[in-house]
Length: 141
Image (cartoon, rainbow, N blue to C red; front, side, top):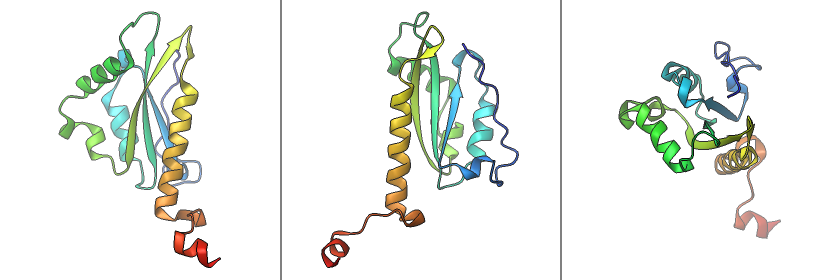
Protein backbone atom coordinates (compact mmCIF):
# COMPACT_ATOMS: atom_id res chain seq x y z
CA UNK A 1 0.00 0.00 0.00
CA UNK A 2 1.18 3.52 -0.63
CA UNK A 3 2.70 5.41 2.26
CA UNK A 4 0.88 8.72 2.48
CA UNK A 5 2.88 9.85 5.48
CA UNK A 6 1.73 11.76 8.55
CA UNK A 7 0.12 15.19 8.42
CA UNK A 8 1.68 17.90 10.54
CA UNK A 9 -1.05 19.05 12.93
CA UNK A 10 1.18 21.31 15.02
CA UNK A 11 0.20 24.49 13.15
CA UNK A 12 -3.55 23.99 13.27
CA UNK A 13 -4.33 27.68 13.82
CA UNK A 14 -2.39 28.99 10.83
CA UNK A 15 -3.66 29.48 7.29
CA UNK A 16 -1.72 26.42 6.16
CA UNK A 17 -2.84 24.32 9.14
CA UNK A 18 -5.83 22.02 9.50
CA UNK A 19 -8.10 24.76 10.87
CA UNK A 20 -8.09 26.42 7.44
CA UNK A 21 -9.88 23.48 5.77
CA UNK A 22 -13.59 22.60 5.81
CA UNK A 23 -12.88 18.90 5.45
CA UNK A 24 -10.01 16.76 6.69
CA UNK A 25 -9.49 13.28 5.22
CA UNK A 26 -7.53 10.96 7.49
CA UNK A 27 -6.19 7.90 5.62
CA UNK A 28 -5.86 4.70 7.64
CA UNK A 29 -3.97 1.59 6.61
CA UNK A 30 -5.36 -0.99 9.07
CA UNK A 31 -2.13 -3.01 8.98
CA UNK A 32 -0.15 0.03 10.22
CA UNK A 33 -2.83 1.88 12.17
CA UNK A 34 -1.69 3.99 15.11
CA UNK A 35 -4.52 5.25 17.30
CA UNK A 36 -2.31 8.15 18.43
CA UNK A 37 -2.30 9.53 14.85
CA UNK A 38 -6.10 9.50 14.71
CA UNK A 39 -6.28 11.04 18.20
CA UNK A 40 -3.91 13.87 17.18
CA UNK A 41 -6.03 14.59 14.11
CA UNK A 42 -9.29 14.57 16.08
CA UNK A 43 -7.84 16.84 18.77
CA UNK A 44 -6.70 19.38 16.16
CA UNK A 45 -10.16 19.74 14.57
CA UNK A 46 -12.47 22.71 14.98
CA UNK A 47 -16.27 22.34 15.26
CA UNK A 48 -16.82 23.76 11.74
CA UNK A 49 -14.83 20.95 10.11
CA UNK A 50 -15.85 17.58 8.71
CA UNK A 51 -13.63 14.54 9.35
CA UNK A 52 -13.57 11.63 6.92
CA UNK A 53 -11.69 8.57 8.13
CA UNK A 54 -10.81 6.62 4.98
CA UNK A 55 -9.89 3.01 5.73
CA UNK A 56 -7.69 1.64 2.92
CA UNK A 57 -8.00 -2.02 1.98
CA UNK A 58 -6.24 -4.02 -0.69
CA UNK A 59 -8.95 -5.48 -2.91
CA UNK A 60 -6.70 -8.31 -4.14
CA UNK A 61 -5.70 -9.55 -0.69
CA UNK A 62 -8.81 -8.71 1.28
CA UNK A 63 -12.01 -10.22 -0.12
CA UNK A 64 -14.19 -9.01 2.77
CA UNK A 65 -17.02 -6.61 2.07
CA UNK A 66 -16.46 -2.93 2.69
CA UNK A 67 -18.82 -3.05 5.67
CA UNK A 68 -16.89 -5.98 7.17
CA UNK A 69 -13.64 -4.01 6.80
CA UNK A 70 -15.18 -1.00 8.54
CA UNK A 71 -16.49 -3.22 11.33
CA UNK A 72 -13.01 -4.73 11.78
CA UNK A 73 -11.53 -1.24 11.96
CA UNK A 74 -14.10 -0.15 14.55
CA UNK A 75 -13.32 -3.28 16.54
CA UNK A 76 -9.63 -2.26 16.68
CA UNK A 77 -10.72 1.07 18.19
CA UNK A 78 -12.36 -0.80 21.06
CA UNK A 79 -15.29 0.55 23.02
CA UNK A 80 -17.01 3.42 21.20
CA UNK A 81 -17.09 5.68 24.25
CA UNK A 82 -13.32 5.48 24.70
CA UNK A 83 -12.29 5.73 21.03
CA UNK A 84 -10.96 9.01 19.56
CA UNK A 85 -14.05 9.53 17.37
CA UNK A 86 -16.33 9.71 20.41
CA UNK A 87 -14.51 12.86 21.54
CA UNK A 88 -14.48 14.52 18.10
CA UNK A 89 -15.74 18.12 18.28
CA UNK A 90 -17.13 17.82 14.76
CA UNK A 91 -19.10 15.57 12.42
CA UNK A 92 -17.23 12.58 11.08
CA UNK A 93 -17.75 9.82 8.54
CA UNK A 94 -16.08 6.43 8.06
CA UNK A 95 -15.36 5.41 4.50
CA UNK A 96 -13.77 2.31 3.00
CA UNK A 97 -11.39 2.79 0.07
CA UNK A 98 -10.61 -0.34 -1.92
CA UNK A 99 -7.27 -0.37 -3.68
CA UNK A 100 -6.74 -2.26 -6.92
CA UNK A 101 -3.12 -2.37 -8.08
CA UNK A 102 -2.37 0.44 -5.63
CA UNK A 103 -5.05 2.71 -7.15
CA UNK A 104 -8.16 3.72 -5.20
CA UNK A 105 -11.35 2.42 -6.77
CA UNK A 106 -13.99 4.57 -5.08
CA UNK A 107 -12.05 7.72 -4.20
CA UNK A 108 -14.40 10.01 -6.18
CA UNK A 109 -17.38 8.76 -4.15
CA UNK A 110 -15.61 9.71 -0.93
CA UNK A 111 -14.90 13.20 -2.30
CA UNK A 112 -18.53 13.67 -3.41
CA UNK A 113 -19.89 12.71 0.00
CA UNK A 114 -17.36 14.93 1.74
CA UNK A 115 -18.43 17.86 -0.46
CA UNK A 116 -22.10 17.16 0.32
CA UNK A 117 -21.30 17.15 4.04
CA UNK A 118 -19.42 20.46 3.82
CA UNK A 119 -22.15 22.13 1.76
CA UNK A 120 -24.89 20.86 4.07
CA UNK A 121 -23.02 22.13 7.10
CA UNK A 122 -22.47 25.55 5.48
CA UNK A 123 -26.12 25.81 4.47
CA UNK A 124 -27.31 24.77 7.92
CA UNK A 125 -25.04 27.28 9.66
CA UNK A 126 -25.45 30.15 7.20
CA UNK A 127 -21.67 30.38 7.21
CA UNK A 128 -19.84 32.80 4.87
CA UNK A 129 -23.04 34.09 3.29
CA UNK A 130 -23.57 30.83 1.46
CA UNK A 131 -26.88 30.05 3.14
CA UNK A 132 -29.94 29.61 0.98
CA UNK A 133 -32.80 32.06 1.53
CA UNK A 134 -35.79 30.68 3.39
CA UNK A 135 -39.10 30.18 1.59
CA UNK A 136 -40.39 33.45 3.11
CA UNK A 137 -37.28 35.32 1.92
CA UNK A 138 -37.60 33.88 -1.61
CA UNK A 139 -41.22 34.95 -1.98
CA UNK A 140 -40.44 38.50 -0.87
CA UNK A 141 -37.61 38.89 -3.41
